[in-house]
Amino acid sequence: MSYLLEFNIVMQTWDARPLFEADINDKYDIFCMYDSGANLPIVCCNKVMFNSLFQYKNFLCSLSIDGIGGSRRYPLYQLPIFNIRSNVSKNSIDFLNLVIAYQESSVKSSAFVLLPSSMFGLMDVYIGLYRDLLSLRCDSNKINMRYSPELGTVYPVGLFI
Image 1: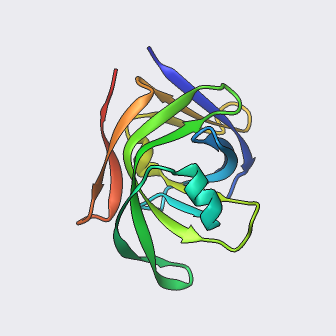
Image 2 (image 1 turned 180 degrees about the horizontal axis):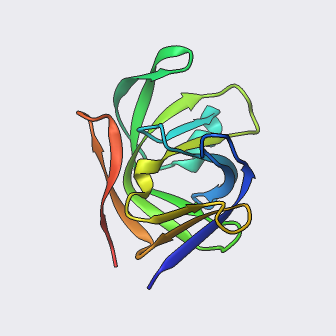
């Protein structure tokens, strides 16, 4: 069986990094960016929202990540389940054992998630092929993830069919 997730693209940047809205862990509709240049997912929100989104998390360590403004240290957490649900097709995919970085934000009502393209390595990804949609097609709705400290990236290692 094939799973299809479709997301309305809210904004398309010139370098193929679409911004879309998705339901994360059945809690909030959050703006997400599919980023071909990132290595780790980064969640940016206030502490209350972060704890509400990810009730079950394991702190791993702090990691220095280079960005536009220079290098910053971010706490890394491993999540047993990171669920992303499409507001268009209503399907969802669970990323199991996903490692994320967290950036605390002072804005109370908004959140942002940067999703690296490496997370979607076992999927077919179509950006704006038909209408302004980001389409993800996968053979399973559960994907086991692994974090490589040596490479500083996350990648899928298997599907649960």
